[in-house]
Image (cartoon, rainbow, N blue to C red; front, side, top):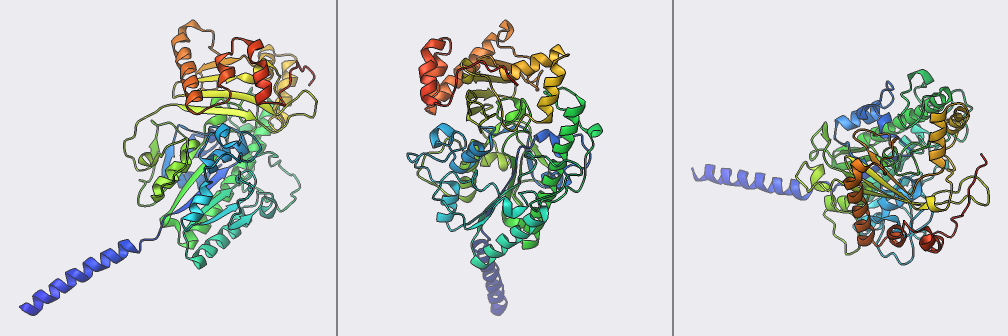
Length: 499
């Protein structure tokens, strides 16, 4: 009897000890951030895209995790958008207000620096300069756009991802891996084009007839043609994502890796990238975390934005730092726990890549925006002084719009509005998600407009936005001119009418 009791006690103790060993030896959580380049979220099948078989790999991934329907970037330009991910700060607080690096005064460490300090191996594929806002920071594992078939070769991404995972296994360290596709950024894949630089063809070619033209663009034959090229590139993005996920699964790391899929901004066409519209800032945001996130879930209630990415990752890893971060952790939403619904996102543009090479065209285009589930309010500081041009948003689509404008007054008005904006814009996105009807002077919306003005001003004060003085004095052009040029020296006065 005593022997039996002893055996039972020993067995229970052994089982208890084994459980403790399992918990203590649980593999640490890895982080894999995959970014698309200039992807319209509505292109994806999982977000309601109409083009057949355009994103099967991303759709499968979404079915395995959590999709946010109301996710935003805070800056709809490549480098400053990625700067927010890396620094956890709005551009004016980090110094990354365009295609530039952090200011020396900014003391917040990059998220990659924090990862390394806590024993993580940090690696990156493509978009290296745009994703590294501190000159002195060096990644442990790096492959550039040129080394990855111009960032457009799925097989090369697969090989380099496998190399990184093998390196992590040999080091015995957990990893932080940022994988950046250069698709579907311009130049789009044109059917029949000669491939160069190691680029690969997409696994499916799209035709103009099957394209669903977004409502913020006119449905013109050449618009459809260019959008079919864009969808070719979006398909190749999905091919690349699928290959990276294949490498992750083959490595054995899938079950202990938190994967997040996003885009850095909207599609590179008029009224999307480099602006503050719905099509500019809304991004796919899909999260897979095996054992934590329930498969096939959708968050259709909360607004989240990339300013919250950094603190959310630290929270998921249980890491605390003594440094300024402008966002807050959204980890409760990943776990389907309750969290206060702020229901508001602030967006900003300060400087973009230079436009057409003419003396009076600048890269400065300061704007601010407030986005909620119902409304968008936009402040165009540049509209006091300038006419806007974009360096890479004006391909076949804009040319088609300008030609059509010669005989179509509605399109003429749209082209003119693109170039010369009012100081303020306001849209009811429940009724007008494409932001076609500016309601800033509509008395029916006066209460909502004033509320958004107040919210923007409060945000600018809280986060020390240098554009605050300009905003507070927006009704006095003479008063703010000097301040605008002080903040944005390359801003030019002029009425540019040549095409």
